[in-house]
Length: 117
Image (tube, rainbow, N blue to C red; front, side, top):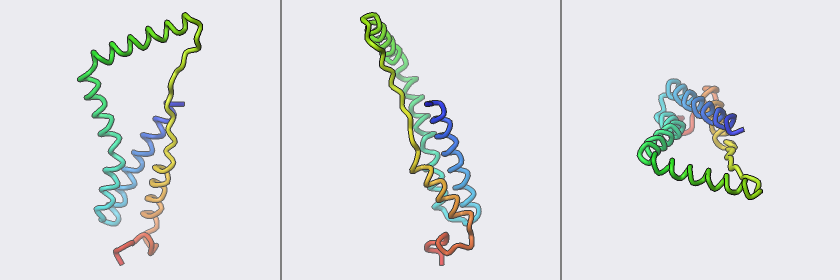
C-alpha cells in the first residue's frame, strides 16, 4: 500500500508541475510558476533527505542494527512484532491539481481571469 501511495504522490506532483507550466504558457501569469515550485518542493525534500542520509550513514546503520536486535529479542520473547507504515491521503493536493486544471482549461471563464479584467 505504501508503494501505491508513493506512486500516486509523485504522479500527482508531476501532473501538477505540468499543468502549472501549461497554465504559464497559456496565460503568461507568473503565479503559475510559483505553483510549479510548490509541486517541485517534494523533490527538494527528497534531495535533502538523501544528502542527510549520506552524511549520517554510519549512525543510521548502527540505529537500524539496534532496532533489528530489539525486534528479534521481542519476537524471541513471544511478542508480536509491530511494523510502522505510513499511508498518505493527498486529498488537498488532489483538489489543488484539479482546480488548477479546471481554471486553465476554460479560457473563456470570467472566474479564470481573476484580477486581469
